[in-house]
Length: 484
Image 1 (cartoon, rainbow, N blue to C red):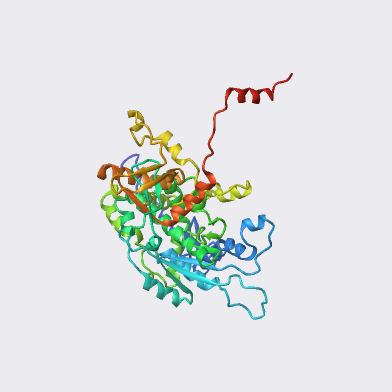
Image 2: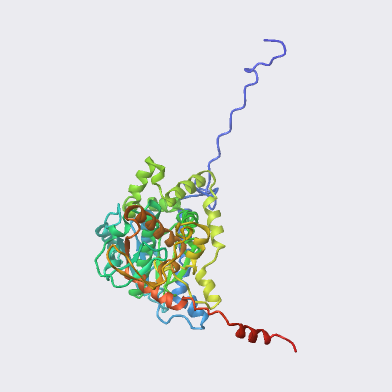
């Protein structure tokens, strides 16, 4: 033993206490999942998950019983006949969980015979969108039909290519105003529309077209409620990605738990907007449904994911945002809830328009709210063409003819001034690629409903001509305010 030293074997370090087992917050049983520092056992987790779903379905129940917000503001009473529901089904985990919860809790006919009150909903249908034609998309219509019919619900197959069943309209890529031509009758396809799009633009345009198709289908089939399966995790990703893609103006509608679309004809509800993706995955495992669906590979999601893992440049904004948010959530469990609460403070543009008795301004392409004159604001902050600096005068006539196909375009309806900023960025990318490939004389074919919406909105919002006052007229106006 050395002088002035202590013997380690005489005073060994105290052994570390074993980590305390995480117990269920409600019943103190051993927990199977930890959510935001709270543990849950099997039974308590299922109760909490069911409670979140029922809370998320409150907007649908309110719409079915009392009508839309617009109807209530007009003083109309609740619906005599309950509303019907259209469920959007894609085959992914959240979509499978939504189908199971609808089967368990959202009954339209089965109820206690002694209960004489009207059922909550008159009918429930499930729609699946076949995205064949979009790069990387796989058709799962028959698998979706089997799952939906096994749940005892009505299956509605849709095709994204049906947006071109009517004669398409075209817009010239040679002009920054994107003038429209309504006399185009040549057939087109989704592959032509999505050709040469970047990963970000492809995912954004695909999502806009699918959501627009679902909303228009709900209206056509007399459904007043559309259920979609976005979880809180997906909503948080869309909040950040949406702002990066230029969709901040309608972000409340993009990520809200509910909003009214198609001029109040349908209410879009997201029942899982309070549930994390990990909760949905655990529910599927406990319900023995894990693996029965398929990973949503629409719009080349799986293909883009594999390519993105090899090359970061091939990842779209939403894919990069997903990696970012999931990485933060892993180390900081309150990341998703913080983003959701922040987004909830944005409010809804549609509700704001109703309160101020204003007409909605909707984007002809995606169908969400749009700010009039977004293209003018973009011109003020970006340089997209060198023509103004070269002294090139803009075309003064109301018709523009491209030398490529001699198609006449109506410049009186400039599509660029009617689009939302996010959709404007998509078509701007197509313009830049067309200028590099074809010298800027190409065109793009769009669904017919885009032209119908553009004409309706332009007739409502076209700027009135302002005539300069003469000197005599100015003197007359000034004299009204002079005191003798």
